[in-house]
Length: 285
Image (tube, rainbow, N blue to C red; front, side):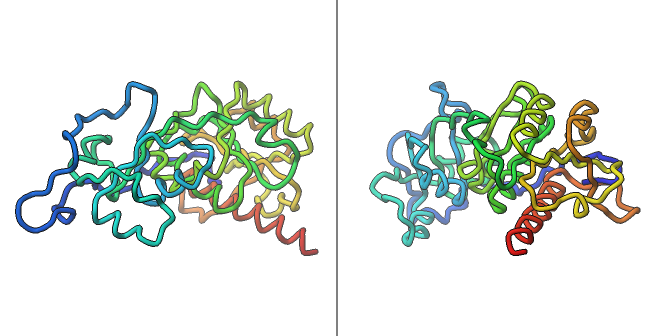
């Protein structure tokens, strides 16, 4: 994790989603079918827009999703010829019209899908047995960081990400874009009390390890290949005291003494890799 348990969010990304004209044929500007929609970042029916090629393809591959509307530019549609998307269900549009549906600066890559939010998984439903890796985010609030963490979690086969329901931000289009499809692959579990949840998971057979820059042991020395729940603290504050007390062990990610801290998403990726390798080593011993 960090030298002093502090995380600093780093909002990344480039401005995008502008209509550059590449989606228009030569001659007069091409218009999308139907009237141009007014900007509506939050549809009144409770649905949400997810945008970006990887995020949208992951939505379409998720049987739990009900697709309400799918829009794409002609160029993007042509680039997806090898995919399994039913092209007949795509409403053709242009970049400008698509941008008007989404938050300012959304990098949509010429495709967006409107869906209802996924229901949060219950703890017992997502983790019926102690096996593999799970992740707890203790009051991590930056959506870009959370999206990046979902991406890393999907890459390492994390069984669930657990967050406190009153403190964690909702899953939005920008978070889904940062997750690059990870929110479709890793259950999002919302709980009332993080400290109590850690106790419950320990009773269920999980080893719970809190990441703290002030810990005495390195993470690699703590992980033994057992089913593990990694607990990551909030940006800037680190783990709350009670949450840290409830963990079986505290561990740190060793970093250069001249570097103050790691971003929480970077620290999560490192911790997940370490846990994955420890379990892989145990399975081959």
